[in-house]
Image 1 (cartoon, rainbow, N blue to C red):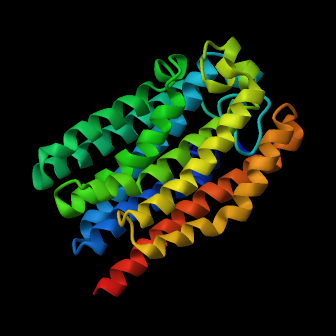
Image 2: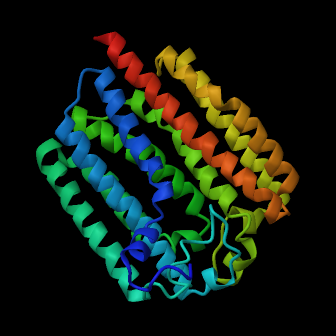
Length: 305
């Protein structure tokens, strides 16, 4: 990062880690696509919900960078393209206070958008916003230290985001939407889960407590594979029980990447260098599966017309 000047626009753009942002775009689109399949869709609500959700996601990434720097975790972590933070604070490109206030402002704007939706679509949205806001801002302070990190990552970037996006369109919740959000939620939890393997020692010294620390890498790798299998089973069960349209089975097309990821996780859980390509394959598996489920609902919505 020597070519990047401290305080430059490029430094600011690095901090939110935009390469993870497609996750939010896909899941907000999934909730809206499910609503469209049922006959509810407004572009203005979709775009506003997208902006609010992206701001929350940026809050998560930046506030995590801030606390990991303050706690000394990122100073000890071996960074990879998928874990170890943005490196902006550890490289001195921005000051910790700048990161803190950037995250705070993003969350405040997102809260304003959430409040607007509560007024125009209903206050049943508020519990989701409350959980999302709390867990986004206090993930490092509490959740990551209470063995709840993976659970809340899966909840927020799964049921909460998909249900929230659906609710602003339809003005209600549905069991079908909840079920459709299970596979994406499990996959997102697995995204964080595997990314924790290279950071295990640094996280433990920094006071974190997550599944890789608690279970050990070998057992954690087996749980990772079990969750990956469970995510695919959710799609199959959803179609068999008619909770999801048959076309969403295209989500299974990432099975080859999933198989490659599972084998790599079981084989290289102790070897960070060899695990890095597996982390990349995991990202492809997760985003690909979630995107294909979304495409499936878009196709189903078009057919339904």
